[in-house]
Structure formats: structure tokens, C-alpha cells
Length: 63
Image (cartoon, rainbow, N blue to C red; front, side):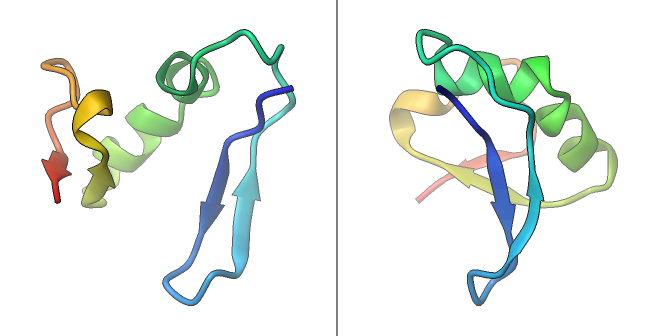
């Protein structure tokens, strides 16, 4: 099972996606449920591991 979660800076759950099959990669799941578009559209700065940074994610910053 793959569930995408969104938490605030102190770790409180803000949003949870519907469950997807566990074989769905994390980035594909994020796109499928609209998380990437929603965050980018709202101007929310996001962070991802280097392995998740892909050219079509304009607001991802590596840390």
C-alpha cells in the first residue's frame, strides 16, 4: 500500500491520499493523486531526496 502524507512543520497530519498499490513508486503516486501539481500551483516550496528530483518538477530543491 502506498499512501502519500502531507504534514505541517511540527509533524501534524494535514492531508492523506487515497491508498494506492504498494508497487506504485512514490513520485508516481504523488503525481497520480495531484500532490505535485497542488503544491506547485500554490507556490509551496518542496524538498526531495536527490533520487526524486526530476526535470518536470520545477519547485523541487535538493538538500
